Image (cartoon, rainbow, N blue to C red):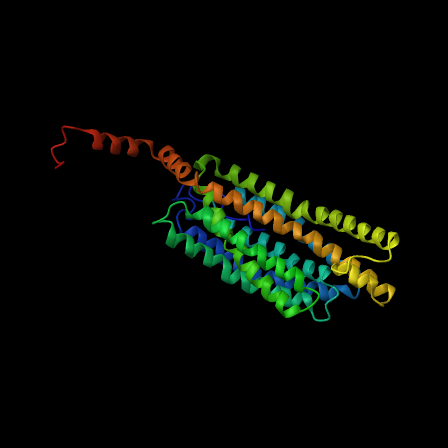
Length: 339
């Protein structure tokens, strides 16, 4: 979702009015408005259909992903020639993608007594409204003085979200309000990378190849993110669950410092015991996302060493004639205008 952006921004400025800082704000506005509409709409659709179709939640999420694919693909094709159509298709693509947010949260946190989908949807919506323009503004303010700051801003966003996500996971079963506060700050710090990553991936690639670069970015991010991560988290969760089940059968006295052991050794019913094992297994499996964020943040910080040079190389390739004239003017010993 985060990689949907102005693929061909800057290819031909007169054809696609996305070049420069304005592209970040336009993308941010599209992301915010689509989130404001899509998140509560997904929650409404799921609640309306859930009483009649028991498995409607994953079906709505799958439909959102499938419908967004042709919309975003056509948006990429029309980016250079028809900016209005491109923006419209981007908006519709993000809108159907945002249907998933509250539904996925509801499927994961079904044990909470309150309306999880609505609360999480509001938190995600407000975090997007705050985070996306915040990242664009911070990048615009710091880049003139520190040209390497774009990857640093993205790396800081990922690294700052790690303790927030960790806190959210720990408080998910204890205090729902505190959990949502952590989720909000984690989402804000993640959202401020959206516009900055979009801008970086454009200005370090020559114009004729920008659409291809964006296509690869979208492919990799969704292949390892939306498509692969739920399966991987599920596999890890099932492995942890099996480990705890084997431990319960093998021994009657477990380490008292273990949260799972304390729950299993207490006088609780079988259903509550099974729920605790299910919850803790999924909770620990989700910690993998924190590890991935640390790795991603480290790569962003490493990219700060190369981004200025890469951007200068692209600028030189875009304007070889003007740069050559500038170099000749600076080296001309017969220029009488120089003092």
